Length: 449
Image (cartoon, rainbow, N blue to C red; front, top):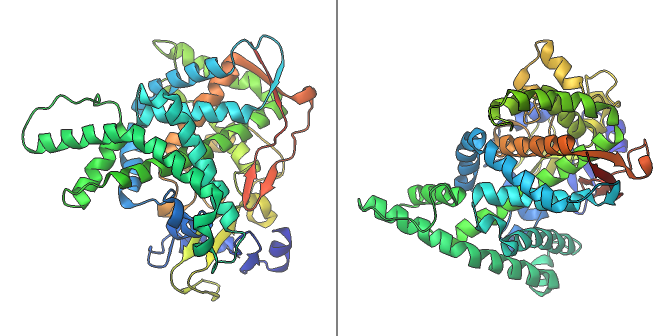
């Protein structure tokens, strides 16, 4: 990446990922973000990189996109109490009895926590805590990654032949079948309720209205768009796609933040003071939606972590569907994987002072100086902050993900001390795999306060 940015400043160049990708100039983003789906799509990228032609998981159709961007985002403030309750329950189970400094794999703890939060908010209880659902949802995402990674080692012309014989596909099908068996009764109940309401009948639902909310939203969208025809397999596909993104990306972001907390322990007390202020102002001693919004230092710290340690070295991953002429006059052919370099890996893209230095106050200070507040928040999207994408096709669930991340970090701060293994002051190196940046495998030491 550094070589490409140095040798080809302001021009496209190719990086030899598992699937070669054209890295476009950062300056093209304002033009690219408004291009229609006829020109390029995220789904095209997912189809090529993650083999969704065979797994079925990863495709984001209009029904899922609207359900997340409109319905879920609109409910985020109402979900704050539920999210907090599930985080408290999950972390009590995952991090119980840590009276002394204990070394553990924090990512393995956080992924269970995030999965339970996603299950509780989207499915409700008891299904959201069903160990079968939790395990199968996590294993399905991992099996899809393993399958697509193995498949991408073969020449594209061989992939349709090889795909059916890879042992990883067996695991993809098995985990999908487990999730489907658990969701089918919920889907059936919601569809029957919708049809009864259409006929003016009152039908007592088997599933409480406040539960399985995502299925309710999806069913309404498919019912509207398909003239009443609802295919349960599409609902299961959308559910698995959402779990893949909501659980795994959120976990990676949260894990990076915990490592940065452990590497920069001087921020712990100022952050705790801010959180304590909002807890004391709350009638029941928990964070309200307004309280979460008031945690400007916590938001700033989380955003700085995502800037310094992003989840990927590139962003805005797309596939072109027809030739695209860039503002630089370069022509990108159809069926080309494209991306832009994350600003972290091109020093010429950053206007921040001391851009290589971790400054947890960076964005909170900018907000007090009258800068664009929405752009400076963790969930904000801008050319210098690509954690959740950019433009009209940015991550539709970024508001939900950012609230979950901040509530997890707030809970950890208020109940635990965190440090690097051996009380080191140097953050371990991240793990680079293809275009992804995974948190270190080194242990984090935690003890209850």
